[in-house]
Image 1 (cartoon, one colour):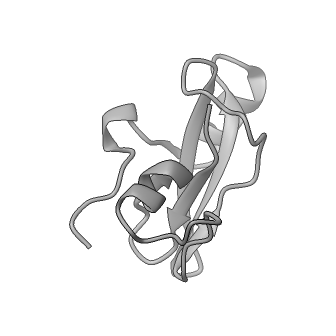
Image 2 (cartoon, one colour):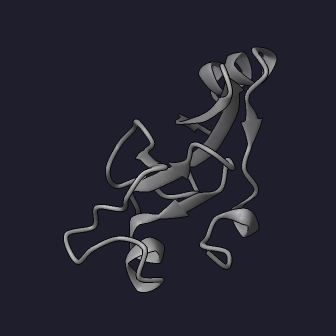
Length: 93
C-alpha cells in the first residue's frame, strides 16, 4: 500500500516511501516541487490500482484508477497512459 507522487516536470512516478529512502522527501514524507501527490486513496496497491499520467498544459498530472474498471478504460480513451509498475521509483536525481 502506498501514497504516490508525480514529478510534474518529467512524469516520473514514485511512492512516498521511495522518495523518503532516496532522500528526496523529508521524514514527514513531503517531497519538494516539482513532486506533487497523486489524487487517490492513501492505501493504494498496484495489484488493484493503476497509476496513470497525462501531460496537460506543459506539466504532467497523475491519477489512480481501479484496474479493469470503466473509469480506467475511459481515462485511457482520453489520452491517459498507464505507468508500468517497474517504472515506479526514484531514478538518479
